Amino acid sequence: MTVFDEATAIRPAGPGRYEVTLDERFAIVAQGGATPPAVNGGVMVAMVLRAVLDTSPHPHPVATSAHFLRVARLETAEVEVTWLKQGQTAATARATLIQDGQAVLDTTVTTGRLPAGPAAGGELSWTGEPPHLPPIEECVDLGHWPGTVGPSGTRGYAAHVDLRLDPATTGWRRGNPAGVPEMRGYFRLLENRDPDAYLLALAVDALPPVVFGLGAAGWAPTVELTWHMRAVPAPGPLRVAARCRHVSGGWFDEEAEVWDAAGRLVAQSRQIARVGRSSRSTARS
Amino acid sequence: MTVFDEATAIRPAGPGRYEVTLDERFAIVAQGGATPPAVNGGVMVAMVLRAVLDTSPHPHPVATSAHFLRVARLETAEVEVTWLKQGQTAATARATLIQDGQAVLDTTVTTGRLPAGPAAGGELSWTGEPPHLPPIEECVDLGHWPGTVGPSGTRGYAAHVDLRLDPATTGWRRGNPAGVPEMRGYFRLLENRDPDAYLLALAVDALPPVVFGLGAAGWAPTVELTWHMRAVPAPGPLRVAARCRHVSGGWFDEEAEVWDAAGRLVAQSRQIARVGRSSRSTARS
Image 1 (cartoon, rainbow over the protein chains, first blue to last red):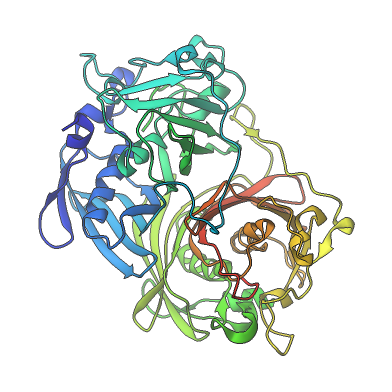
Image 2 (image 1 turned 90 degrees about the vertical axis):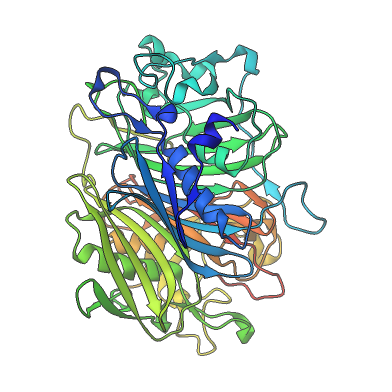
């Protein structure tokens, strides 16, 4: 079992209830300790999805809306799942991650069945242009990027993922941001593991915040993130392309597309987040 | 009071509870009566938002996630609001539209404060390219388009909105779809009323389904829609531009941007919906 699967594991604790552990191995560790370590938001969504799919009549999380309410401590927590509808085409559940009696992450998830291969004959099928990325060997290995690895250098989110960014979107690392809020790159776990719905939940929020491209720095907390799974991903690295449409009043949107190694659009997301205060360190939830 | 304000009115019915009426004047009426008349999804979201904002510590619905569970009958219903968090920057509530004891529409809403004018000095501010629309006088008045007006010709959604589509996105009306899943146009109520958060909730789902551009027809039910309010809109008609990125397995996404008359991006949305069966008539929720 990979570290990611361990970090997103659920343990049944009664009807519609699951115990989980917020695992430091997927935490974002802010430099200087200005903010407490927080588990990557995608990892939390993945554990909630495991709980939802445990009793779902359909196999795929087609639409997942997640509102991030509080920073969870690196301890055990509980997921509560309540089904609102179980229909033939779609089923919808509310699922909440709870710690100390308080909702940390509130989600609504609609499940359904998605295609695993090419479209059936006669079925309407259409896809927009894929993102343009340089070959993976020309991309920049982010390695243990600042703010995601603790003092020991071995823990945290960045120690478990392999992220290769399009060099055109990495100027911020040298204090020379591109002036455009975009991030593009290849994403996979360092451990050998094929992508699935849970890894897509991580992939849609895997890149550094797009506003780094505008010179912003610091932890950029996600307030709300909705993502759609569109197809069952093929094995291999994922291509992730993120952009932003508007920044003002301290709010920014970030929308990501995830394409699989077979060239199919497998996930889409949009989140609204807060621009980090540059006095904070370079990290993100 | 406009018909829209009447159709989205809430009546207090106890702590966190409001009575509403699903108003036939904003119903989508399918031709031939294949499906029962259903109130436009944006109108239902607007009434839920009225209930949320009634007790919100912040003035604007920054992030609204809505999962559509069942077709509501054109009768009274109840909105239940439960606050999950009330913070300084953001507050989050769950709000559910309930009829006959069943959830019809389940939403999670995060409120905050958005800018009403130009960015403050020193604040990070950035906006992408606006959509390109022809002048309004060159656009096509959809009028009482098929499937949105009942037999009497006076009721229903289309009788209360003024929708002018970019001619490049109207080929489907003549059986000659553009082959691209895009819709663009100007949107306002027929009655004189300035845009606000409630009207934006309608605007993000105001255009015909983007898949009409690919030759699809029929009611295209929204399964989930999340929209973000980004700024307080200026008076005047709204420009709405919608596109799609992927259609397969009977699912399609539709993402819309709404720009105000002052040229600001005021709302963004993405929904996942079902491709209509062409045996059904041309209408949408």
